[in-house]
Image (cartoon, rainbow, N blue to C red):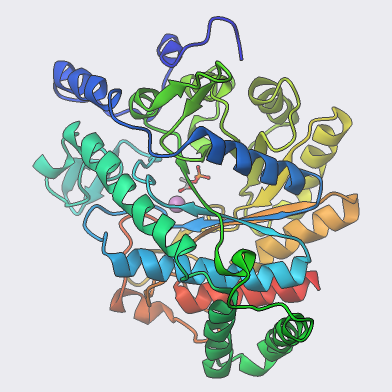
Length: 447
Ligand code: PEP
Ligand code: CO
């Protein structure tokens, strides 16, 4: 941390992608109020996640980070959260088996409300509107009033994050995450999947492992480690006013933590070395992610490592690559080599979603192809295999619901079906079954 850093020192730097609140007095008053609210997460939890990520950096754990592109204020039922958690837990079991190491489960959840946009305006026919920036700022409804930034939404984002976290904590500690139960859900998926036979080998091996444990006298329904899981929260640290209002000094260590989530990431559009986002992130002690897109240079990657992790603490920094399926095998190796040569401990993960989005020619809806997403993951694993580095995790946009937003998968979604259940408010997500397809196919790549 630099000596002159403080939670609002980012204001001295250019801050991209910030809303223009119509009444600055009102937004300042709301931020002041937020600064008095209790934290959403606790420092000791953040430290546990940091230790788990340190193990992942050394190749002894794997990160599964997944959830919505943008959480919605209007889709906040217990059922939606439960379905999302369920699919992430199911994927984690498959990935634990295939990687042979613990899988760290991090949701894009309980705070993923702010969105960076490529353009400040959106067109609806002849109508030109300010862009939707996530429910923490405005509404996606295509009319001018709905697009006016409303700072009271920051209070709603805080409250909804708190209630999501409450449910997540009770589900993950209260029996929902029971390994035998998650395994049964996976068996049900495999037996009803068009690719069932292909996935059966992995499912059967997991079954054998569970039976082996039971035969050794381990009571699967009593063992706490098989009943409860740690589940961490994350979102993009985009809206700096909100993030700094939830940043508090830990009295024990004197360090600053952003207590809006366990870990935060910096997006592809806001990772400038001299910008406000890296300035803010450099002073908080949470583990951090940073997206790395196809235009990233060697100097930028090394600059990010130096700025965000000058003390070279393992687990502090995850680089989330999102190159595009056709580019990853060319673009990633020199960056991994540069980071290795400079001795930076980095956890490399793959976001195979954001480099592979396109608009469907028929409906104009934004979509992604399942096969192309897998291709980027395959490229990521190959690059790390060739270099002898650890492919430390995956970063996925998904939902547990039966949406039709991404094309392909074992129960193929076709282009003409996209509008059947296209409910995302931002990017297209894998549906529950496509997400499990992905986990089993990644397992095949890794075993
Ligand atoms: C995202 O993760 O939702 C996102 C906007 O990604 P990126 O910054 O990589 O474009
Ligand atoms: Co997205």
